[in-house]
Amino acid sequence: MPGVPVNHPCSPAKLGGADVSQTSAAMSGGHGDLLNGAQRQAVADPGASGWATASAGERLHRLAPIAALTLLAACATQASAGVEAEAPGFLLGVWHGFIFPVAWLLSLFMPDVAVYAVPNNGGWYDFGYFIGIVFLGVGARKSRVVYRSRIVRVR
Image (cartoon, rainbow, N blue to C red):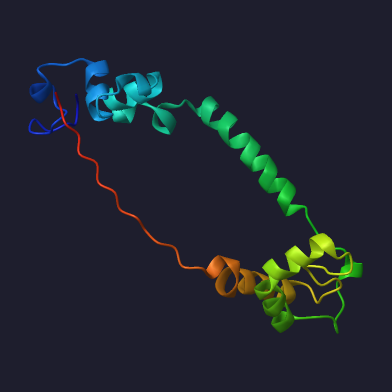
């Protein structure tokens, strides 16, 4: 296997000259049937699959939908009737973003409760709403990182 050190548990020297299917079985904890053909190929030659080996035409076909969606998103505008100078601004946007989970739940059962103020003053309200959700509200919860080690035993 190219790129695998000789003292690595899955090296051909340690596996007794094993082929790709045996190597992938060893790397999956003895369950070689769980790896599909692409995964076996990636085990055999990690640099030979994916974006690096795609031709320019294949890359263009992969990027075309993303480019089309980006262009469509650039065409989006806010209705001028939804923006007023004296309407809720940045601070109310922060507050509405912070209380979004409660407002959303209430909006499911009460038709006069909304999660977003319309009209608003435009970009500053949107920015405050984003800050309220991401940094103060739902998005601000702490996440735990769980580290898990896996020992591969070669039989």
